[in-house]
Length: 87
Image (cartoon, helix red, strand yellow):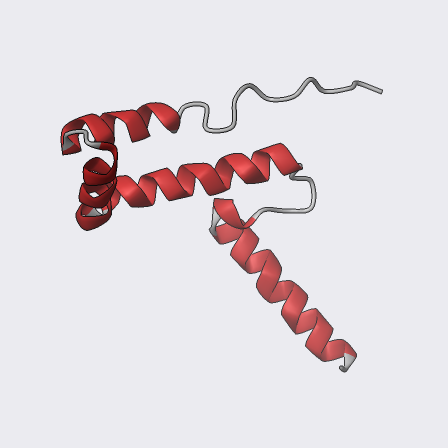
């Protein structure tokens, strides 16, 4: 792999990270990454009606109730954030 290839790959990665929030960045911790993944998943479930209908059928809930539950889970998908240690 040549130096120009590495530069090209890094510049593409930086472009993706600037354009899409969910792709992460160097300063992102594990909790923030997990929250992004969970929120993206719930947004996809709510946005795709067949998937939402599948979850509603599997949990024996109405589609509206399932949509509401997913929207509520998007608020704190991974619980409260961990305490930060200030150095």
